[in-house]
Amino acid sequence: MEYQKIHACPNDFILYIHEFEEMSKCPRCGVSWYKVKDYKECSIHENSKKGLAAKVLWYLPIVPRFKRLFANGDDAKDLT
Ligand SMILES: [Zn+2]
Image (cartoon, rainbow, N blue to C red):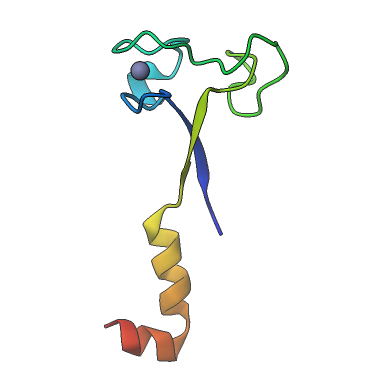
């Protein structure tokens, strides 16, 4: 199943995408992007941030899921 990992504010104010992508702390609550102050490589922001994100959202896009469901003729009939 296809998914995206998106870094998020621990208090759920923002997602670190678009204009927030390069920020290292939340502009609403001021809580750091970092979980701990170790500086291991991060798989998502390997070119900018280092360390572990405080919170990660797993996003499952709906379109690829529908494509898979509609790929089977019998399931497609039941879905429409
Ligand atoms: Zn916040």
